Image (cartoon, rainbow, N blue to C red; front, side, top):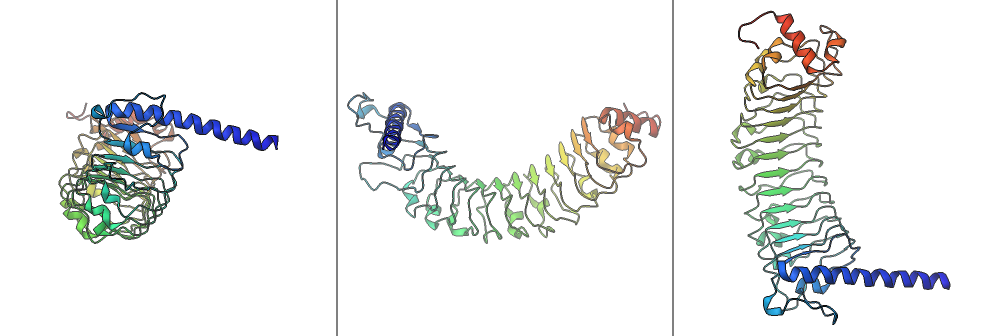
Length: 359
């Protein structure tokens, strides 16, 4: 009995401490309109979070006529199991622009999610969500949606708002993308799913700047990624790609590691490249045309089938880091390349002989 009373006392103490912490945050939000209730062990979102109204007699808040409207709510890293949207007419949700519900235990998104009619950013990552309601598409202001680390297997096209620019749905169970994605998307992360292919319409997303499709089951790309003029970052690592790719020259960061590539000549004309990861493929040779990559700073060639390296690599003045360990490199002694790129670069230049254009 004494142990039970101790447990009740500790529970009451924690509840009181939590209530004070919530009230403190709400009072601060009355001035700023931004409320953070993260890491408080909450099982539900308290009503005062929506109204910014503290009932406690000991709490002197901002006069109601001077209070800011709630524009940002962060209840991440709690144990909230459901998003219950208040139906109280006195509570206005149409001023909320940012809603962070990540790292909770939410299993479903309420179908009246469109009550947040001015929402710009919604983060519901790291929950237990299986479906996305079509009502989400009614939030025309929504530009950033993070639904990663859930249990979503189907992503219907009619659930995505037309104004969406950033969509993150990595670490789910998606086997196929919808029939279309909003044309406005600039950042798309579909990594760690079960995709076997990318739909052809991806090449029509002309605003796309970042595409991450790592850790899927993609064997080949039948789409023309070269038609994406603004693509800067491309990550297709941890797939099963064997064939040569058609990529745009706009790419700055390229990750094709952990695939089955044996031919990388298609990279030679991508002159804006700064970082390239080609590790863990079956590449047998590096084209001498890599000399065209005059902005390249990092080249990862780890764990391939390279017997040698072209001297032209040493001519790329911007190149600061090259990784070659895990290759046979029968024509270069290990005591040279194991010392790093500086030693390897010096060797390649000496082996090639003097050239006026080299420095």
